[in-house]
Image (tube, rainbow, N blue to C red; front, side, top):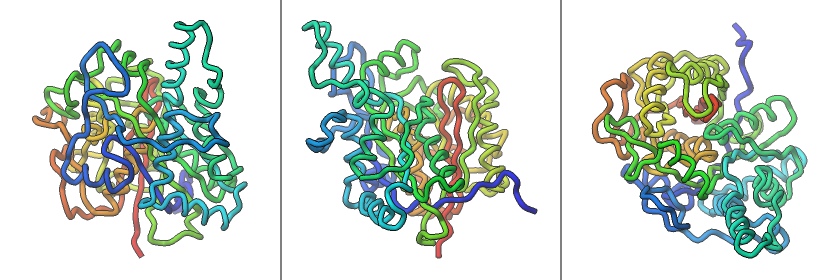
Length: 404
């Protein structure tokens, strides 16, 4: 029987990352294999409280003079991922441009902070000197659209280009938009993902909500006490499956929901989270038992982890191996969904289940099968990744990899 909810699967022909583990997917993979946290005290700027962060300490590339108006930490973070030679993302985009034409390639990027770090510096100058810096341009540095527009210009593309900003689900929802653009023949390929950078507002804002941990975060742990904010980028090139290499992983479906239960807290029974996972399964035409691994949103806050575990058990059961990887990267907010998409793609590629860094004692109220240490040589065909944001903005992505 034909699935009336089905959407065309799309191939992922290249992907890249940057996070606290380093630039490139090899650095991220190395951290995942040993389940090693990359969270340290903040060095980018001063704050008046103790915490650990997933800060990128590697020097970021400079923006060329012709696009200097877009210069921001966010743009440079994206450029670092794009240019990393071992991940082969930029050459693959060039091949796609030759194949389809630049007007048929979109750029959809999720972000939460965008260029807020630069705006904070500009505002400090305004307070101290009475005027903003002469080279500060709000629309090309602060605005959500700035980073995708920078990438579009950097790559010489001219297809649809916009930002998604739905808090912590932004990067995941960008992947869903990219899939729909291809499925509806608006584009033949789309560069999707998420980019977010550390800034004062998010660190102080989350602390005001009493959600920030002073020490290493502990997802799904009995004694978890808050998040560690991170930064980074996950970028993926989606292409029509029919013309791509058959040995590519695929996006099968992106289930979304928006329950609007509360500004910052999830519904206590996880109704929005359940709906996102169910929508993904329905679009993909899959049963819960066909998912081999789930990357949890797992922020390490008391309420969020409890609610997610409840929703996962109700939707997928308790036998499925699940884990949360924010103990390695920190919570990269608008980039988290895309960065964790890269993590599950690495799990598919290398046939292993990532562990849950920081987890010491599993919360017994969580009836899920939470994986503490990585499981090597685990057969994986179809995997899911959860991203749940403020305001009930939820997304669950299903990937698979049918090897030739």
